[in-house]
Length: 174
Image 1: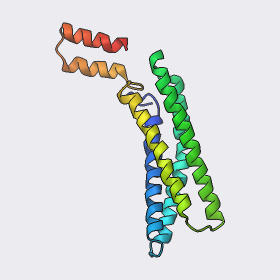
Image 2: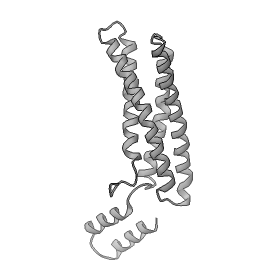
Image 3: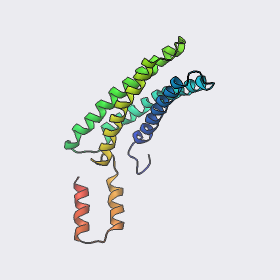
Image 4: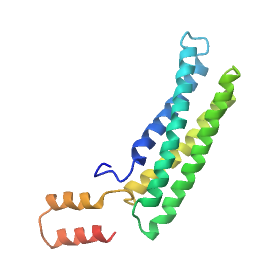
């Protein structure tokens, strides 16, 4: 694995989110311009993005569970990690359900509907919340951050004095 990357979750998660968001945008365009010559290709692109997002999100969840079990953290961070995990699992199941629903709709040649679009757009809210909670884990709580690399970077930037030593000790103790 890459030295600075403790697991693959950060790589997979960004692609999953992007594919779901692009799918939602394409579904909006398809329903807004149903008579356009681009309507059929846009619908196809929306479906491909949705289904690729659903498939990739399986790897995202698997990598997230691996991170949940292996990334070092303190007891005070566990509730925040659990909250992100719970939101992520619920969000994944929601998007997988939408992808299956769209597969059924596609197989049975069902026309586009505002109800389906509403479901896709509503599913963006928990997706954003889960992403926010994941970002909080990294940027507010330092989960998954390679502290040794951080200490080495700080060592190169700061003069070697008492303040520097206290900062490094504080980072090591967290």
